[in-house]
Amino acid sequence: MKHIFQKGSDESRPTLLLLHGTGGNENDLLPLAKMVDQEASVLSVRGNILEHGMPRFFRRLAEGVFDEEDLVFRTKELNEFLDEASAKYGFDRDNIIAVGYSNGANIAASLLFHYKKSLKGAVLHHPMVPRRGIQLPDQTGTAVFIAAGKNDPICPAQESVELKTLLAESNADVEIHWENNGHQLTLQEVEAASEWYRKHF
Image 1 (cartoon, rainbow, N blue to C red):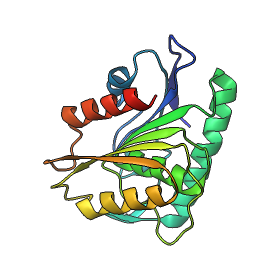
Image 2: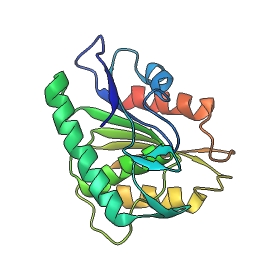
Image 3: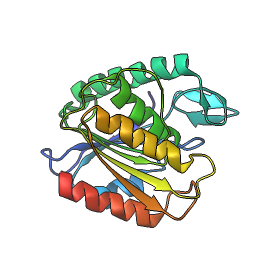
């Protein structure tokens, strides 16, 4: 997978896995990483799917309707890429925190839905429920921050609440942060996520 790796100044810190939104790339969220943890290593990945020329992490059938078969395949692909990248760059595979926005948050949530210990934690900006009707792996010890907009037209508030419930039922430690905004990524929610991160990691 096309990516950027930046080695951090403190190898004991988590590695931040950056996952962009639809139409973004591996450079988009680099400024966020500095706000979250200036000492951490950063692995920023570009989605392998193109939708009308815009990079994404998995296909969708329509707005808000995921191609589940492709989602499962791409989630496995990303999980295996994390194994390879940790070996190549020498960071701790068990100490990865995902920071994802929109489509990137959805693939990060999908990792938690499909793989035990794929992530140590996740910051999910405007995520949706990746799949329904499946048994989630035990996520005891996994901390998750969800940033949601009360007026988000793409990701309705009940999606965020349902995602929190499903992750909490898998024993993840989940916190949800609300903004009176739409689907955009705001400075306030990034600051709230950074504060949450400092408390947990």
